Length: 259
Image (cartoon, rainbow, N blue to C red; front, side, top):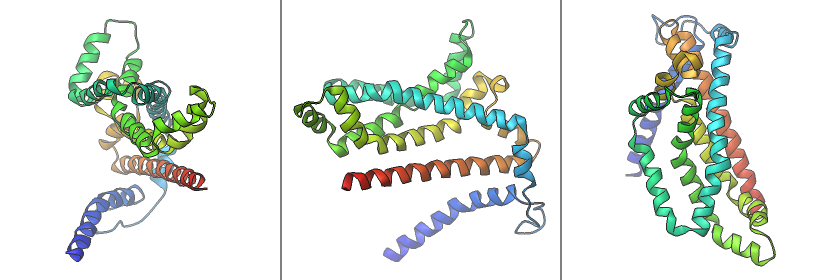
């Protein structure tokens, strides 16, 4: 039974890894038409990609939009989650209901609603999308924050710090936050990666007026498969680097806690 489980996991890993490896190889291939493996390798497509001002601007817009939404969520939504979880637990069921409702609106329907509601106002549609992004990551920020609080017994930490003379703000800043920030980083990374890859909402509501990486990728799929693969490769590298940073910070936090 154990061998069967190991073989099954290996097969699943191969199944998931082959498309990623194939895309990465195609991003560096000269030609790949008549053989199993690429006929040659080159850095031409990566170089061309980073020399394209349109890609650099699209990449910057994606980082700005996704990172801005995550930052707003951390600054405003996370404190609200902490206050409700620690001091108003009776209200948490209503907060959870709101979190579940986030999944009730498909991207296409949400896009039509945004266009219908905001098209006649002076509010830029990019800001409307930013607001929707903040709400979109609510389930991930809530679950990450809530799990971190449970792991460290957040209410007991706050009570102990206040008994020792700390104010609520000092207890949060010096005791609670250092204990839960690894979980917040993980939630922020997951939220950023999801928003960075979002296509339906930004394409339907804003489109080429605010071209992000996903819109740029869609355009390149019709013109150059090598460039499109290079975009995907850069995206995978970015996500890998973020994952490594979060894993390193989490490991350091655990080491400091153990010490």
